[in-house]
Image (cartoon, each protein chain N blue to C red):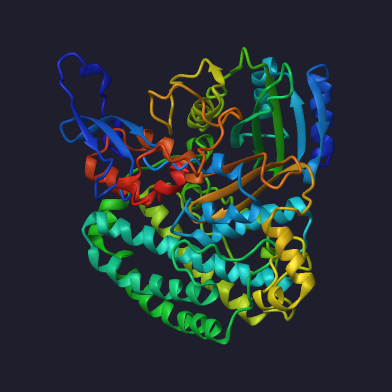
Length: 168
Length: 401
């Protein structure tokens, strides 16, 4: 059996998904690949079912926004962990701002459910096929996605708000 | 578990269900989150969770703050073990900056983190007792928690939301008083803890109420992203301290307690054992405490002591640069995780080289595992569900960020 490390992992991925890996890097020891967002399910199920890699633990799922990257403003970042091999992998998928859509991974990982809802709640990224895509931390009536960069924090010096009840 | 085998689906037409709101402010939820339960008599058919009542937009705020000002935000995630969050954040930034901390700092951090873990587990375990009706243990172990907070107070001046340590080290060396308090705690802990143990661990009522309630299998737990004591109770020995040692955890000799069935009793027992392991680690750290400085040599990130700032030009300049956010930060992205009180607490930090984070995401363990709650309590009674919930150690601050 080959040594299961970042090199082996990348080699396995390149054999299978050569055309879909947009770039690969290794910042701070964690293999990071930018991947075609349309094939994310294929990639995750390949890693999940791989007999040696066994990447069956979704550590983290979160969104990110780069307003200046035209055509790929929004991103979803997956952190996978193979508990057997103690190997981590970061996958990034980018999508344009007029169609921020990506398939849900709830079919593979039950833990993705709320994390995708959170990403939707804060970035407005639509996870197609998600069983229950609603806001999770913010109120349902909210009509914007607060973590987007176009929404700044409230100006601390504003005076038009009545803060009497907050003792300010 | 017998009750889980109830066939609920067959009777939908003839039955009328009751909807019950458990929370948002219910004394038994120990935090502000709501469960809307669909009840068939005493049995839970379905439950739906509403959260976000104390959402404070930490991730958004973090994008506008210099790194050292993010530490107080992490305090308020899992406020039962704030020091672990603080240290986790410091270590994330250190990883980004490539700072090597001296061994003495690591050992100090280990002592602080393990004390925090003990206080976290004490609260969780004693609250399980409270929800069953045994208030005595709770009031009793709170003395110990008070001692731990005294230690934190002597280290950094704060008790609950500690903001302990700095990027690159600790703000000061442990004082003589601190060492004295820790040593007293080490003597006192086994006594009080032993009595707490004898109150609950072999208590017939406690065992009857906890064995078999809120069970989850290892496969489902992994699929739901469980980490920490809740995962270990199902029999998976995943512990970040061992798997990806940080902060010199590889120097210490300790075991990872695991359970078997993943029910409330196993979660309770895993936490009980972990506290004893934490004691072992603290003792080893005190015995082998290396000499040296309590901070790394990174003047561009570690705030100099106040006397220096007032009397030394160089220190004044560094102080100014740090506070005004003039220090250079490399571009990059880093994920660092620590074993928090209730699971793998991760920090995903993307830096674009400016004074504040471009993106900071907290992997909050209880936000991820709390979604398994409906599955765990389906078919059980409401009183069992409450015990299962408190044994999961769901902290509202961490849930809502």
